[in-house]
Image (tube, rainbow, N blue to C red; front, side, top):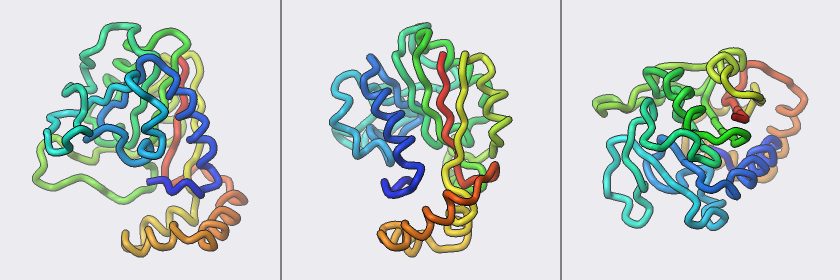
Length: 209
């Protein structure tokens, strides 16, 4: 989860602003519309936004997804999408290459995919929940390999050692409190921005069809 104060947040915001103008933009693998990081941008999308879940429920009311589908076999026509979000989904997929290939198929030439996935984050499946496993972690090289069919791929770290330690060692309520503190965020950002890493908490990938 992003809090909007991280030193790498502007990069995420800029990418979201680009995709908000896409027609249509697909949000793949989400439980409900504008989940997590997209919530602050909900009013930017309008009718161009299409959310797709897997075995989705109707418990979210007017925030229910628009489409129930399998990301390994997307129910969208080839070249029909102007952009795609795939946020914190890739690690849960048993055939990630098939999913990436499907995203490539449905995107128009020149359109963008914004994907985030953890690298050093804790295990986060739901025991006993069918279809919600935690299979993989990816390096930047691994993500570029999966996305080799795209014309251009940029992979950026989201949270180095300070953020990794916080995520791995601190209970969630305390972590939220720390990251909601302006002073704590200034300290974390000052440290994190001075420690380049290829072992981050998460990755952001920006791929061009």
